[in-house]
Length: 417
Picture (tube, rainbow, N blue to C red):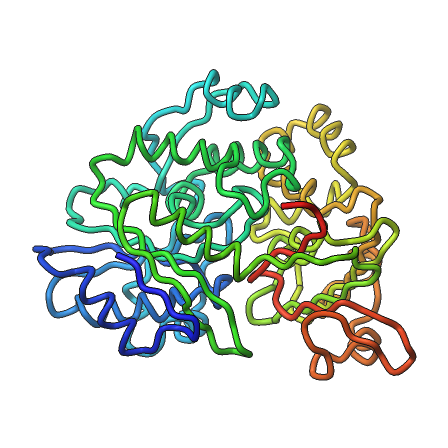
C-alpha cells in the first residue's frame, strides 16, 4: 500500500491509510516498533500514536522503540514524540546487550562476497526477544527512509536488526560499512550492510508477522511533512521509498563547500555519537581544506552509553587508518567495533577541518577527541541560526557559508551519483 503527497499527508489522510492497513486482521496482541526521539522528524511518533488509538480497545498493545545503542527515552521525550494519548507505561526499553536472542548466523562466505573480501567473519543475527515472541499477532515496524552512513538508506529491516538488535549485529554491521567506505554507501540502496540485512530477513524473519510502515519526509520548521507512506512487507515498497527519498532528501551541489555551518537541535542531539551526522552527511560535499562548524547547544557527551563514551574519549576521531591500527592493537576496541566504526565515520581524515561548538563539553574534552573548538556563544553570535537560510548565505562581513539546519534529514554531495 502506497500513499504519496507533494504537500504532505494530512492528519485525516494518514489515519485513513493506517486504518486501511489493519483491515481484515484478527488481532489479540500487537507490538509497535517506532524509532526513538532522535528521529523526531520521521513522522513515526504521530503514526505510533494513531496506531495505538486504533488498537487500544481492540487488543493488547506494546511499544518497543528501536533504540539500538541510544539511551532510553525519557518521559518528556515520549510525551513530545508520541503525544499525550500513548501511556508511558506502554513503552518498553530495548537493552541491546542483554535483551536479545540469537536467530542464526550470516556465514563468513556471504559476508566476504558482499564486502568484496574486506570482511570475512560470520555475523550473528540477534534481535530483541519480543520480535520473535509468538504471542504477538502483528509487529508494526515504523520508520523513516533517508540517506544513512552505515547502511546507505535507513530503515526497513535496519529498524529490526540494528534498532532492536544485539551487540554482535550492531558492531559487525557498522564495521562492515566503515570498511567498505561511507562514500560508496550513503544514499544508495544496495550496500553490503543492506545485503546483510536482506539475507537475515529472508533466512530468519520469515515466520514473524512483520509489517513495515515506511515514511519519506521533509520538514518546515518543527512541522514534519510526510510525502510518502509505504506499508507492507515487500522489499519493492522499500525500493520505491528509497527512490522518493533520493529525490527529496539528497542535495547535489555544483561546487564543493568551503565553509559549512550545521545546526544540531538540542532536543535531538545530545552526543557526538548522534551529532556527527553533521560530518557524515556533508563529507561528500566538503572541499579539501574546507571547514565544518557544528553548532551543538545540546551536546554534553560523546557516546550514548558509558562504555562507548569512555572509548571515544580514550581514542578520539583520529582518522580511518589510525583507527584501524588502534583496532589491531587494542582489545577494548575489538570488542566494541561499532565504536571503531563510529570513530572512522566521524573523522575527516585531514581532508577538511571540523570545529565543534558544544553547549556542555569543555575545550579540552573537544580537542582531546581530535576536533577543533569554538565557544558556542561566539559561534552563535557569528552564525545566528535565526538569521540563516538553508543553503548558501553571504554574511554581513562578506563571508560565504553553506548552512544546514538539520543534517539528519538529508545528504549533501558534489560527487556523481
